Image: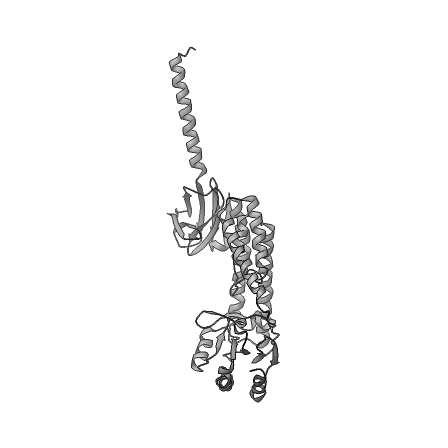
Length: 386
């Protein structure tokens, strides 16, 4: 077959046009993410797709379930490195870490967050593995706490539940830290870094948390050097290093730190009272003699407050309403805090408290100079250190 020079020029132009079109279509496809799946066992019929960034949560897509529970969602302009997205269905939020070009299958029956499966995204599958164990653990913790608040429990039953709570909590923390270390080069480890159990402020114990952040940052830098999460991690590490340096310059106190919320939700720290003579007092609003006990303390407090005496009172309770009512009705003028874990509070173990009420007198230098003092004996010791 003979082609003229003119025909060859046309064919060459057509070839380049086809190649350009294929390249454009391929590039477009590579920037997309398709999410397909099926949700059954719930009455809700809408599925939503949300993108989560450090600045906002942005709704990207939504769809109504088909009669068989199937759905399809898409992301038109996905990131080249894994980014956090959330599938919202029936009030549950399923986190996914998605990358441009992925095609993901997400299925669930019943409770979505506890029962979902995901395929087609390595980071999302890792996130599923972490989330399943972590969420199941939190649910079990809440179940123990719910049992603990029952009114008809014996003291022995409460102690056993407190023991179960502490043991399970420690198991969840160990699993979380193990996941972070084993998957330090994955974005899923970044997600795990920022998960907190109820009443937890720190990942581990605060001072050594920066080690885990730095470990993950170094791993992410190797695997995803262009990830925006790496910048966030480095900034967090810088802040933590600065805080540790500041703490190192401060005078060390000789008692376990307590940081709990007061009835207004503000965190109060025992260490903030350094330089004062402090009575650290543990009590329970549920105990019948609290009114008389606090009345005695109010007289002492009024006498010595202006001389640098302070009371830091920890309520060992589980009912926020009961605690706040007692504080307000008795018009307690000092610092009142509670973590609302009752006898399951780890603070009781830190101070080796076996019964209530209990107290510790702390001098201006941060030394514990008295324990379980009351009445004239308490006044006599306060006078020594005022």
